[in-house]
Image 1 (cartoon, rainbow, N blue to C red):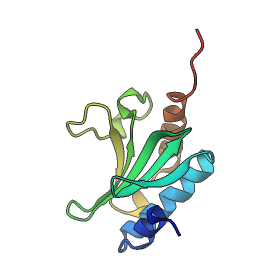
Image 2: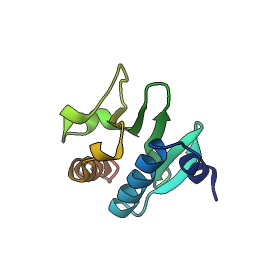
Image 3: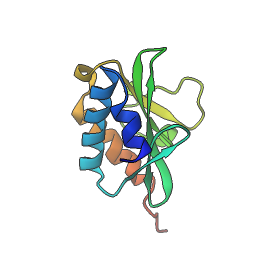
Length: 120
């Protein structure tokens, strides 16, 4: 088992349940993502470039799905949290019931467009 999976499985409830569910949705939506362990958290990479990450904040009691190019995501901006970050934004969940599959999938689909080669 890799360190990213260990991070997820070693989280206490409700963080572990939320992380496992998010992992399932993200990997089904964008199967070409590669899960790595960077900066002491699970980090998804797309074609060798950082795409999004998980962060379980026990102190603040939420799970973040952070997007590296989050400031460029156009859909569901009202759900994206930036908190003084210039480029990254995140979807934030305190429990499993808060995860809205449609919003998460639409944000993922919009984010992946930012990594596709744009031809003039």
